[in-house]
Image (cartoon, rainbow, N blue to C red; front, side, top):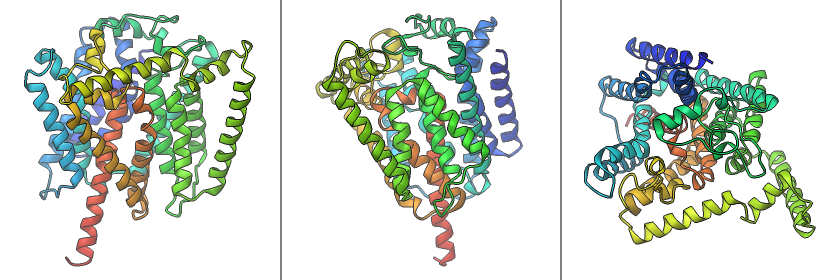
Length: 462
């Protein structure tokens, strides 16, 4: 078990050493290997009695992010040309900072600053990636590392399922979360209700924070794997590692047992098939959907008390009769009501992780509402504008870019598409690995666009 804090610490030291040596892309080592096991590394450290040094470990990610950002700014050779999306993100950050500084809402300054970090710090990762020179990044290398993390997650899940136990049951997870975040253990497995589904099914998190983060990380994994092995002519050519990673991702998304990410996993594949004109895949998916719909109709018509187990979970999800679905609906209604009554927001910490730790969260089941409830309709509009802009840019530049630039574009586009549905049912940006990876790659994508436009300008002598 001690291997997790060792990997976390080693990835931080190696990444920092590489940055000091001038190899800034070494930052990705920590982003990929350190943050993916972050919570497990912290909980194992707590298990071994290292609780006094855990607060220092917890700040490693912020230290490294700020370091790479400052290094990127310091090493700039020319003043960067800003894109529209840069201004939107700067506006989002500035607006959030204003809400943190001013005494808006019921939370004190400390809680508002913690909420600010949860709601907006990931945007710093955007600028960390945005200021990278894309020519100096070995995209295939680091995308392969993400594929390896996906394989490792699948292997851990395999043994979790085999022995019917969560890694978190033996990593000290429950004690760590209670000590540092005031969340008491709950559910039938001594962790939290997040680790089980209706019907008593275990949900497995592998070495991630919880099954929701595991599922979201799998969406990143499959998006990157697809981008890595897609040629410029749209042919998909995975090698043995790629096929193993795809299999591991399917294992992970199945046993994470998270409904929105599960649907998104196959929607990513479907969307990819559409934009790359893979008619065989789209037709197969259409046939599967048609067969599934026919089967669901058959079950509804012949509904009886004999239908139980997994099918009961599926049916109750469809007709919104299970507690989880009802809980999402109630949280959405509560959040929308608060947003209508307070269009400028209730202040940072009124929703999301900070409010959840105090048992006072409003609309805390929806990423969009979490932002809107705290900072109002203006901040929510900025977030939506940023997100929509990335999808539009991804669709536009996917047809233009080539090589590694195209891989980055496709990965970001698929991640954004894949996260849409889960964002309605969870605070997806609260996970460091998920949000940091998402927004760092987003920054690299815009850096790619700007580099391409500069090269075109020089080529035409403008």
